[in-house]
Image (cartoon, rainbow, N blue to C red; front, side):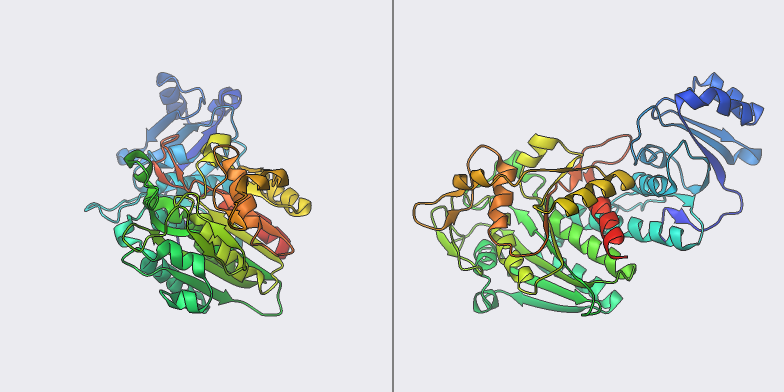
Length: 453
């Protein structure tokens, strides 16, 4: 079980999630000493307020936490981030469903401690031992895996380590895995994956995982796995390069999603594709002005070597479409323009399928994982025009997230396709640590459960 959860506990502290409108009435049902302590500390249920009451021998017996008036699905993260190790049980939910409480609790309790001498000892939430609890546990484990992968520095999360992460889940769930690496990429016709990664110490590769009954609908997942992005010869400045260990965040999302699919035994035929490279610089680096061939047969003029993620995705998406999946989903830390448009919390997604878009929006509302549909505005394809090739890889200063999605669309021949342009990161919020974050994962997982289960 996830280390921030426990099935049952003998004497857990009672957690009361409270809003300002409910506080006066709720105070009447609390033990007099607890209500008095809350009053003495000025507790009113405002967002982030915490009061901890001690019982016999100094043990914690009641915890009051203010939710405020907002309906942030992960609001409880602000509480679990502050609490010490121990067992806790929800006594008042503040109108939040258990799924949101559990997701928030695990989110706030998370710490990346791989390189720390003192390991984290998170508070544990009692969630029971039924199937609903098992589902919450699977989700928390998948999100923790995603965050660990993204938080790990590139020195320990290169293309081979990304491959190892896929091999680990393949072994755990009996999936098949195939890896095409180095010059074999040219022989197997993945020229753009090879071009982007050929300058790095570790060979570029395409990692493929297959699982499930071939008679079930095929779900194809593709994730951008740029282990570190210098920008290539269009070198990033230091402030933009600082967080580029997270440029494999798309691969982390689909690895986590694949784990959810397999651990839940979702009735699909799963095909996972992760092009894993490092965009490095040496004498073999691809250059601005080069024209690359592609698996699809199109040619691409390189306008900017820092627009490399869409190149490796182009070959992987082409491969994914060759088996005619029922649904194709890709995740990528593709553009800064997506953050300019929607900020750090909203995950933009693109699709031409209205029914799928409606399902994702509904799933985002149910899961409390905010997403926003963006337009695949075909007239902007003209921004990708090249005078010497079929297209170029960057579209200029305007509509950067949209033109990136349109670039990917040229490599997609699938019945249904969804592209998510995610940040895979967040700044500190409500006491949660800055670092890797799942963006749109719970929304997509909720949609998939609805669609296939």
